[in-house]
Image 1 (tube, rainbow, N blue to C red):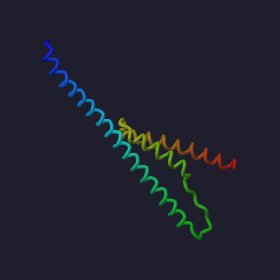
Image 2: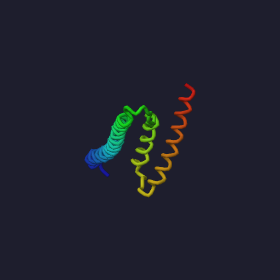
Image 3: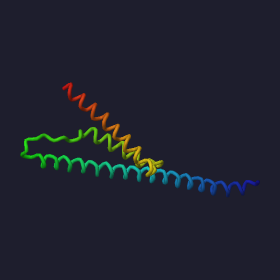
Image 4: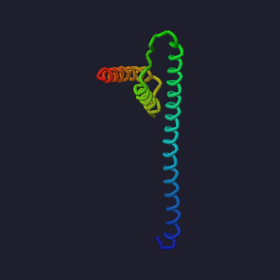
Length: 122
């Protein structure tokens, strides 16, 4: 192979390698940006739901003298974050939804037990 050919092929191979690397990095960034946007949308929607449920329970009990139960905010956030991570996971299959719901119920029970244990001590 002569030097003239290497001088010509070197930059071409360099440009191709750089282009492939840029395309790969761009794809990875888009993929994670999309996942983050999806998580953010789910969590923001969940927070709005929590606020509406809180307002609705207060309105429903207003003037009755009864105290209602509202799910502890911390437990709610952790539960939603767990669900979002499981659903957004690339290995998610719709057939796994029952397992995920059962797993989340166990998580919620543990969180609520911890929440009430902490508040008993206060």
